[in-house]
Image (tube, rainbow, N blue to C red; front, top):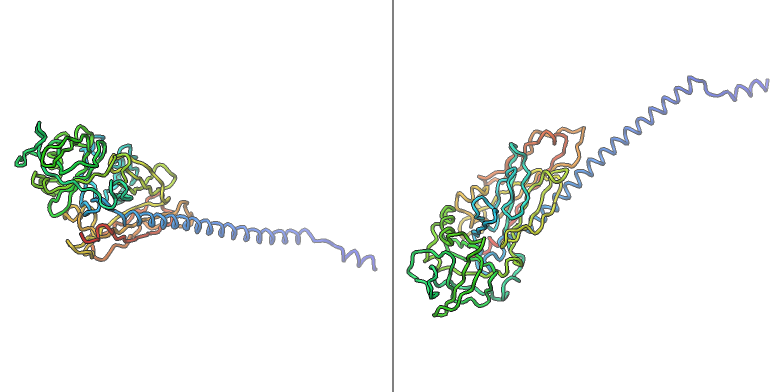
Length: 416
């Protein structure tokens, strides 16, 4: 009897019991596996969003520093140039002229190039897309070291704004604008190869014309000497007459000899080593796996790109509104798109820039369906508004975030 009891106590699991235990184990393992996959996806999605958001915040910090310095030393230590009109026959624009403001923007057009030599082609937004995206541009000097005397930079007064005669003495009552020659009260400190800003008061604002210094002429009596600006690829064929035509089309009126006689020249030093630079922010959609916000730095004297840097991956849209105040005031009274600023002749009254970035994640979330468009909150003053971002078919499973910030432009805010 004891042997029979022992055999019964040592009996193993039956096949049915084993199958049931195995099934229960597989179910538990499956639940754990599914839970791990879910947690992994959640972690990946969170990490994805966190990485994109961190890059976007860093990009806004960088943009804020650049925007707040827009216009710095563009008029030397004098008033900031409301517009800098430059010319370059190297193909930086369709007609050779560049209109450089302390800060401005242009609509991003697929296939267009940035207005700089050797500039990349804009590949965003896609051809035929309804996306409203801007190219943000600002011009400033990094410091004052390009001036001969940083404590008190030399400002040269234009004495004769006429065509140079054989004796070097221009006729002050001439109505003919010079092709290439200006007479100054002094040329001490100016060297051939320098670039300069000719500061001309026009239409109640200070308009600057970028000119090259090709040759320094001898004294002409009365303490005057002259500079030549031709031949040079950054001086138009008809000289200041061509600049006058361009300024008139921009709403600043006609350049004339009396206005030239009220102007001053600021020597900004050798072109290749100037500290004046133009910075572009734009979206690149072809170089990388994701739309990427780029920052390009251009030498403002030679129009050549000195660096191109990716700033933030996943930036799908960049838009800018401009806070404009009344003449002589620092408060913002309305927000406008750049086209509205130009049409209203308000380029000298820009006080702030409001930047909007639409950022998407870098990897799709198969369990998520994005809305058809992303709304960007606009300032209440208007009338300028941000356009909603239309989500593309390839982005339907991406998460989106919107970042906006308003940045005072300190060089435009200071009383003039």
